[in-house]
Image (cartoon, rainbow, N blue to C red):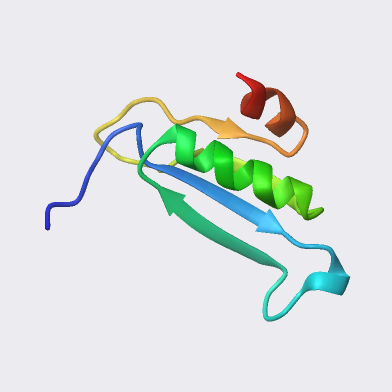
Length: 78
């Protein structure tokens, strides 16, 4: 299967509260679309996680977008 490239590859990184930690403090998932990433981020926020998201680094793409934990609520609502 060919690997997709470009700005439509998203990640969401979640740091769960210490009471919900199983293995590691931060877990990251990748998504093919921004809509999927936003949905997952919204679900993790409802569980009390600290979220960071963005596009995956692709050397062929000049732009990379990072959404900090302070910006994530606004990003989800866009």
